[in-house]
Length: 139
Ligand code: HEC
Image (cartoon, rainbow, N blue to C red; front, side, top):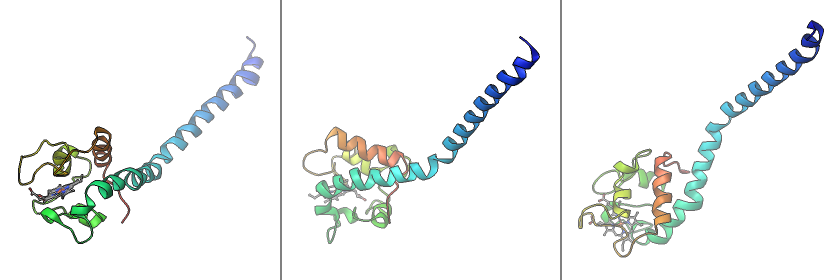
């Protein structure tokens, strides 16, 4: 291995390689914030809101606020119901809403939600994942 070969070939290749990794890492580190926030809003708009609209709005939307709870706007969702907040962003295990849709709460006051039937496992998982990811939603 001559010195010339080392400097002329190996060094440039190595430096290019290191540079590429550096650029890649920088790109990765810069991306996540806006991308994650966006994915999260999408999560609400595309998945969670339709679940609420189809299963909850008739009692918790528009003029209806059973249990003091409306689920049709960010402010109302975060305000919660007669027992206080129902969504604790980042903490599904502390969120009354999750406890109730899993039918893990009391039999009455507040009872399992929706009162008749149960959401599909996929819907429950989607709502839980959304709250765990910070319950981000558009205003
Ligand atoms: C048929 C009407 C009806 C539907 C549909 C319904 N709810 Fe309710 N909900 C109620 C009533 C009535 C109460 C208050 C009852 C109680 O406290 O036992 C309540 C209470 C709640 C509470 C507790 C509020 C508090 O502070 O105590 C949560 C959380 C809740 N509902 C979530 C949901 C979700 C999520 C859905 C949809 C998956 C849903 N509900 C669908 C009637 C409904």
